[in-house]
Structures are given as structure tokens and as C-alpha cells.
Image 1: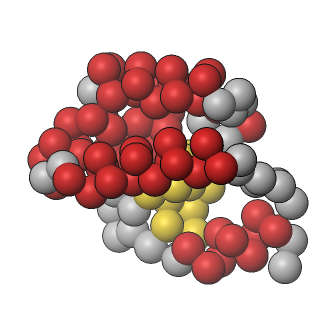
Image 2: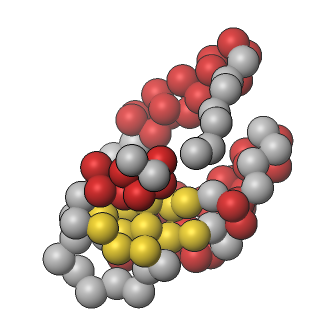
Length: 104
């Protein structure tokens, strides 16, 4: 089971990123996730925080989410989608993925 421990400064940075993402429109978020610029930004953040993207998961319910994960070279997980998207893993809902991930 992966352990995630964030220091206070990292928590503040994550909160800032969350607030930034929430301020975007749906179209802006989609653009950020599916364009090369957006993927580069994600890769820069991963490098800054020592995240090994090849050992990480991009979890989403739509094709653009999976596409972004593939561009970033993460493992891709499709949850609860009726779309036919070629992801590394496919689960009916997020809880099923969480149980698989934690071995519960």
C-alpha cells in the first residue's frame, strides 16, 4: 500500500493547486489535462515533489483523463465510465479501485 505523507509546505502547495484547478472552467481543465503544455506542467510538479510518474496512477472517468495519463507515462485507471477507452486498468467505481490498490 503506498504511503503518502505531505509536509506542511507541500500541503500548502497542494491546496494552492487545488484552488487553482477549481477556479478553471471545465473547458480550461480539459485543455490543461490533454495538451502537451498541461502534461509538461504535471511532469514539472512531479519532478519538484519527487513523484515517480511511472509508479503513479492517473485515475479518470473519461478519455481525456486516460490520454493525459498516457502522455505523462503513468499507469491509467478508468473508473465508472461507459466510454470504451483503452486504459491499463478498468474498474466499475472508485471504491473498487481503492480496494484493489490497498489489497482490501
